[in-house]
Image 1 (cartoon, rainbow, N blue to C red):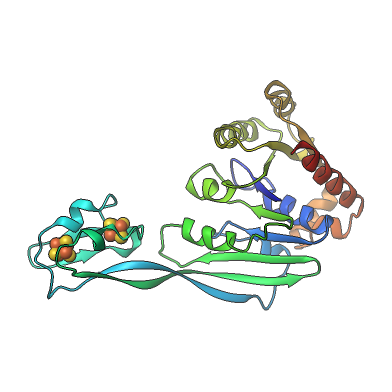
Image 2: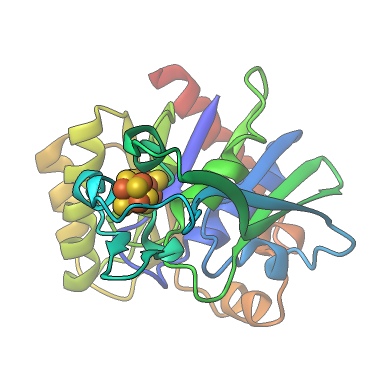
Length: 276
Ligand code: SF4
Ligand code: SF4
């Protein structure tokens, strides 16, 4: 089973939920898909993780063979090739590695070379296999690294994906193929606004979903009213609690010190399993 933990915006406690859920339910593959700012390794103090480079095939032009005909640039939907007056230039950072320019070149002047775009890491901790990735600084596309960490999903095991924040491409890449999405929000008007955008995305993708309210007690009832109106299960409320906040600020997942929450996360997992 694949459960993605997402939220419409950052700072809602999404990683806290993913990590505490994983620690509560036993053997789990915990995969941090926020490759621009992975927080799972920090929250679990992961050490000694094994690195694996992620490469993308990128076109390289043989200027000796190139006749400057322009067919490659005409083909490229991403404007990643410029045919100038004296040479043809590839812009690797905006290339999507589709290989099309190589196919259309009449002179066979283009070949591909691998370019490192990031690194993924794998580590073991108690019952968890933890995977996270880091996008190389300056690279604009997170999706290839997200695709790479998702190769560590094990089909017949429990996989929990910590999604990047927001509702853009990296989130779609993360939650695509998930069996269930847990949406984490805060009970405030801002939380409701971002939650409603995230709900639109998961409904568009047709993925079953439920809501966890984090810092319950700080705002109003609008998120609960919204969930009732939209028929979205409210899976759990995590109170705005000084102990939880202090543990978080000390880098300690709260189920380690507050074991009563382990049972609540186990119940939540059972509820999800029954819903599928
Ligand atoms: S591989 Fe695809 S995206 Fe990259 S430069 Fe060629 S046509 Fe453009
Ligand atoms: S298609 Fe080939 S020959 Fe034509 S401009 Fe591009 S690289 Fe040069």
